[in-house]
Length: 460
Image (cartoon, rainbow, N blue to C red; front, top):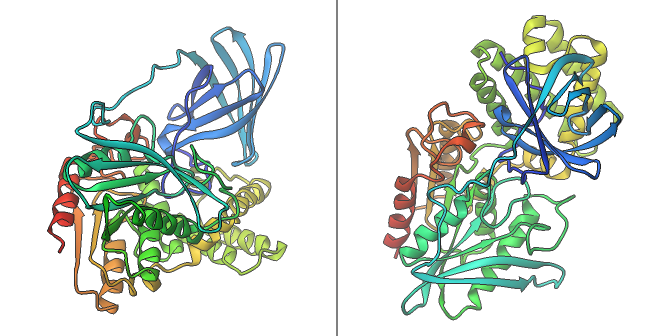
């Protein structure tokens, strides 16, 4: 049974490029840790089984000793080089120490997934930049235009959580490039945009929320309206994961949005999305249903404490009290298996890490916001698709929430579909874990690509 040592699982994770030296080991012979160590005392760590990639680390190397330190989660590795390809040492977290041997691995060559589009393209590809109405942000984007005479129906692709590039790159997968290629071949123009502070887009990614990203989408919408090749009355939005939360915010405020497509969009308040995600994640790691439910319930109660309007030290103590009450009534085996906590000291460390990671403005806003408040105001056509094997945005509960909100708002044109066998990235999965995202050859289901393009083309 794997020990979950990351205390916050976000909607979508991205990975970093490989660095100069790669070292790999397993905690308890099951949980893989991969370190990409650079020469300047910096590096990145991956935990593939938990879908966590590109976690910053600091490195201190003295003689034959090495210390690798993480801020979030607060953890460290202390080891010694036994030869030029082996480091033996201890992983330290939450007051626990676990032996960890790292072996030097050859840095793998870049991987190109089969669906990644390759030139030459039967359509126009234009790299564009544009400025927001406040003249404070610049956006870098790719606009693909079908060959032939316009004006064309167009879509804006909206990324999931975390700082994403315009292709929503995850590992070797580039799902937004795949979606854009398919739709453009079907006669639909596509704009895909770098997130703030990523690629050629400016701006800070700190102290912002989904509502700031909704502003960014509205600026992209305004840009497309200036293009003579685009039909201004047929501009829609396609949002994945958090993007499926952002799209209804934009459409509820802008009646010119022609349609929205929600790919693994949320229909529940963020707090409830996250508790469902924690439960499903635990189950995917082999933890029994009762223990996973107990853990996710405790996480939900800690989140309730953190949703207070202002953070205070009392908030931290409330979260700690919630955790300790759960620990008192839960078997030590389950506590250790789910959190790594073994005593009061490690409990406080665990809660401090949880609070620190959860106190970010984006996260607090996400936890407390109900997408129904915006979905119920959306009057344009809506297509909502979720994969039945999604363990990040659970299909049944979220699709029910989306449908209930649309019904409440008397939306007259919506389609809700759960697609069998697909994960959060709309890949046909087997194990259906986060780690599998990166190993699958398929980037995005061709069936779902067809569902989207057929639905858009049938709109009047």
